[in-house]
Image (cartoon, rainbow, N blue to C red; front, side, top):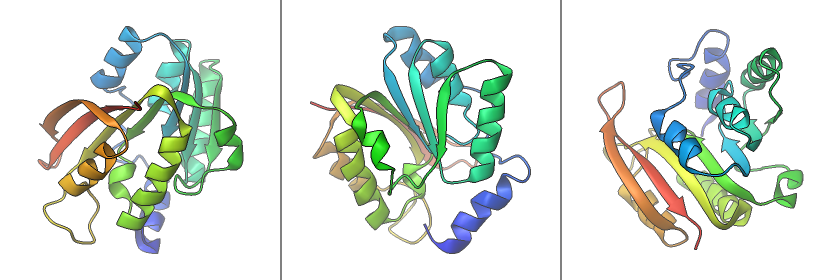
Length: 190
Protein backbone atom coordinates (compact mmCIF):
# COMPACT_ATOMS: atom_id res chain seq x y z
CA UNK A 1 0.00 0.00 0.00
CA UNK A 2 1.54 3.30 -1.03
CA UNK A 3 1.90 6.39 1.11
CA UNK A 4 -1.09 8.28 -0.33
CA UNK A 5 -3.39 5.31 0.13
CA UNK A 6 -2.23 4.89 3.74
CA UNK A 7 -2.80 8.60 4.32
CA UNK A 8 -6.32 8.34 2.91
CA UNK A 9 -7.20 5.69 5.54
CA UNK A 10 -5.99 8.02 8.29
CA UNK A 11 -8.06 10.87 6.87
CA UNK A 12 -11.20 8.74 6.53
CA UNK A 13 -11.15 8.03 10.26
CA UNK A 14 -11.39 11.75 10.99
CA UNK A 15 -14.98 11.27 9.82
CA UNK A 16 -16.79 7.98 9.26
CA UNK A 17 -15.24 5.70 6.65
CA UNK A 18 -17.78 4.42 4.11
CA UNK A 19 -16.82 0.79 4.85
CA UNK A 20 -17.45 1.19 8.59
CA UNK A 21 -21.18 0.47 8.71
CA UNK A 22 -21.22 -0.61 12.35
CA UNK A 23 -23.00 -3.80 11.23
CA UNK A 24 -21.49 -7.24 11.83
CA UNK A 25 -21.58 -9.10 8.49
CA UNK A 26 -24.01 -12.06 8.44
CA UNK A 27 -21.11 -14.36 7.50
CA UNK A 28 -19.40 -13.47 10.79
CA UNK A 29 -22.66 -13.82 12.73
CA UNK A 30 -23.16 -17.30 11.20
CA UNK A 31 -19.59 -18.30 12.08
CA UNK A 32 -20.04 -17.16 15.69
CA UNK A 33 -23.36 -19.03 15.93
CA UNK A 34 -21.92 -22.31 14.62
CA UNK A 35 -18.52 -22.43 16.34
CA UNK A 36 -17.31 -22.72 19.90
CA UNK A 37 -15.45 -19.65 21.15
CA UNK A 38 -11.69 -19.73 20.93
CA UNK A 39 -8.92 -17.30 20.17
CA UNK A 40 -9.53 -14.83 17.29
CA UNK A 41 -7.39 -12.28 15.49
CA UNK A 42 -9.12 -9.53 13.49
CA UNK A 43 -6.67 -8.13 10.94
CA UNK A 44 -7.64 -4.67 9.71
CA UNK A 45 -10.24 -4.45 12.48
CA UNK A 46 -11.06 -0.78 11.92
CA UNK A 47 -13.33 0.51 14.69
CA UNK A 48 -13.74 -3.01 16.07
CA UNK A 49 -17.34 -3.91 15.15
CA UNK A 50 -16.64 -7.58 14.37
CA UNK A 51 -14.01 -7.91 17.12
CA UNK A 52 -16.58 -6.77 19.67
CA UNK A 53 -19.20 -9.19 18.33
CA UNK A 54 -16.73 -12.06 18.72
CA UNK A 55 -15.80 -10.95 22.25
CA UNK A 56 -19.47 -10.68 23.21
CA UNK A 57 -19.86 -14.31 22.14
CA UNK A 58 -17.03 -15.44 24.42
CA UNK A 59 -14.05 -15.30 22.03
CA UNK A 60 -10.64 -14.06 23.21
CA UNK A 61 -9.99 -11.40 20.58
CA UNK A 62 -7.09 -9.31 19.37
CA UNK A 63 -7.88 -6.58 16.84
CA UNK A 64 -5.17 -4.98 14.72
CA UNK A 65 -5.30 -1.89 12.53
CA UNK A 66 -2.62 0.52 11.33
CA UNK A 67 -4.79 3.62 11.86
CA UNK A 68 -4.39 4.86 15.46
CA UNK A 69 -7.73 6.72 15.39
CA UNK A 70 -9.56 3.52 14.36
CA UNK A 71 -8.03 1.70 17.33
CA UNK A 72 -8.92 4.61 19.64
CA UNK A 73 -12.55 4.35 18.48
CA UNK A 74 -12.50 0.56 18.92
CA UNK A 75 -11.16 0.85 22.48
CA UNK A 76 -13.84 3.41 23.34
CA UNK A 77 -16.57 1.13 21.93
CA UNK A 78 -15.17 -1.81 23.95
CA UNK A 79 -15.16 0.26 27.13
CA UNK A 80 -18.75 1.39 26.50
CA UNK A 81 -20.01 -2.20 26.37
CA UNK A 82 -17.54 -3.55 28.95
CA UNK A 83 -15.93 -5.92 26.40
CA UNK A 84 -12.44 -7.32 26.74
CA UNK A 85 -10.58 -7.03 23.43
CA UNK A 86 -6.87 -6.42 22.97
CA UNK A 87 -6.77 -3.69 20.30
CA UNK A 88 -3.40 -2.60 18.96
CA UNK A 89 -1.95 -0.38 16.27
CA UNK A 90 0.20 -2.38 13.88
CA UNK A 91 0.84 -3.06 10.20
CA UNK A 92 -0.61 -6.45 9.23
CA UNK A 93 2.56 -7.23 7.26
CA UNK A 94 4.82 -6.44 10.26
CA UNK A 95 2.96 -7.75 13.25
CA UNK A 96 4.48 -7.52 16.74
CA UNK A 97 6.25 -10.66 17.95
CA UNK A 98 3.86 -10.88 20.90
CA UNK A 99 1.04 -11.97 18.56
CA UNK A 100 3.03 -15.04 17.53
CA UNK A 101 3.10 -16.34 21.11
CA UNK A 102 -0.40 -17.72 20.50
CA UNK A 103 -2.13 -19.46 17.65
CA UNK A 104 -5.59 -18.43 16.56
CA UNK A 105 -8.65 -20.56 15.88
CA UNK A 106 -10.04 -17.77 13.71
CA UNK A 107 -8.34 -15.04 11.75
CA UNK A 108 -10.82 -12.55 10.35
CA UNK A 109 -10.13 -10.13 7.52
CA UNK A 110 -12.89 -7.92 6.20
CA UNK A 111 -11.35 -5.81 3.47
CA UNK A 112 -7.72 -5.61 4.55
CA UNK A 113 -5.91 -8.22 2.45
CA UNK A 114 -7.38 -6.89 -0.79
CA UNK A 115 -5.83 -3.47 -0.16
CA UNK A 116 -2.25 -4.79 -0.01
CA UNK A 117 0.37 -4.88 -2.75
CA UNK A 118 1.52 -8.25 -4.11
CA UNK A 119 4.65 -8.13 -1.92
CA UNK A 120 2.62 -7.20 1.16
CA UNK A 121 0.14 -10.01 0.46
CA UNK A 122 3.05 -12.47 0.48
CA UNK A 123 4.24 -11.22 3.90
CA UNK A 124 0.67 -11.30 5.21
CA UNK A 125 0.24 -14.92 4.09
CA UNK A 126 3.55 -15.93 5.66
CA UNK A 127 2.32 -14.48 8.97
CA UNK A 128 -1.14 -16.00 8.56
CA UNK A 129 0.24 -19.49 8.08
CA UNK A 130 2.19 -19.17 11.33
CA UNK A 131 -0.64 -17.54 13.31
CA UNK A 132 -3.41 -20.00 12.43
CA UNK A 133 -3.89 -22.92 14.77
CA UNK A 134 -4.09 -26.41 13.24
CA UNK A 135 -7.58 -26.62 11.68
CA UNK A 136 -7.87 -22.85 12.20
CA UNK A 137 -10.11 -20.78 9.96
CA UNK A 138 -9.34 -17.69 7.90
CA UNK A 139 -12.51 -15.79 7.02
CA UNK A 140 -11.70 -13.33 4.26
CA UNK A 141 -13.85 -10.76 2.51
CA UNK A 142 -12.55 -8.77 -0.42
CA UNK A 143 -13.48 -7.25 -3.73
CA UNK A 144 -11.87 -8.17 -7.02
CA UNK A 145 -10.01 -5.83 -9.33
CA UNK A 146 -10.40 -6.15 -13.09
CA UNK A 147 -6.72 -6.64 -13.89
CA UNK A 148 -3.25 -6.68 -12.40
CA UNK A 149 -2.78 -2.95 -11.94
CA UNK A 150 -1.93 -0.78 -8.97
CA UNK A 151 -5.49 -0.41 -7.69
CA UNK A 152 -6.56 -2.37 -4.62
CA UNK A 153 -8.44 -5.62 -4.95
CA UNK A 154 -8.11 -9.36 -5.25
CA UNK A 155 -7.03 -11.33 -8.27
CA UNK A 156 -7.88 -14.97 -8.86
CA UNK A 157 -4.10 -15.51 -8.70
CA UNK A 158 -4.19 -14.30 -5.06
CA UNK A 159 -6.77 -16.94 -4.21
CA UNK A 160 -4.76 -19.62 -6.03
CA UNK A 161 -1.68 -18.67 -3.98
CA UNK A 162 -3.70 -18.96 -0.78
CA UNK A 163 -4.94 -22.40 -1.85
CA UNK A 164 -1.32 -23.58 -2.04
CA UNK A 165 -1.19 -23.02 1.73
CA UNK A 166 -4.76 -23.42 3.01
CA UNK A 167 -7.85 -25.42 2.05
CA UNK A 168 -10.76 -23.50 0.57
CA UNK A 169 -13.91 -24.65 2.37
CA UNK A 170 -16.39 -22.16 0.98
CA UNK A 171 -16.56 -19.29 -1.49
CA UNK A 172 -19.59 -17.01 -1.60
CA UNK A 173 -19.70 -14.59 -4.55
CA UNK A 174 -21.38 -11.20 -4.39
CA UNK A 175 -21.09 -7.53 -5.28
CA UNK A 176 -19.89 -4.74 -3.04
CA UNK A 177 -21.58 -1.34 -2.61
CA UNK A 178 -19.75 -0.03 -5.69
CA UNK A 179 -21.01 -2.96 -7.82
CA UNK A 180 -17.56 -4.60 -7.91
CA UNK A 181 -17.39 -8.39 -7.83
CA UNK A 182 -16.57 -9.50 -4.30
CA UNK A 183 -16.52 -12.69 -2.27
CA UNK A 184 -16.35 -14.21 1.17
CA UNK A 185 -13.81 -17.00 1.52
CA UNK A 186 -13.56 -19.58 4.26
CA UNK A 187 -10.14 -21.23 4.37
CA UNK A 188 -8.86 -23.81 6.84
CA UNK A 189 -5.37 -24.79 7.80
CA UNK A 190 -4.94 -28.49 7.12
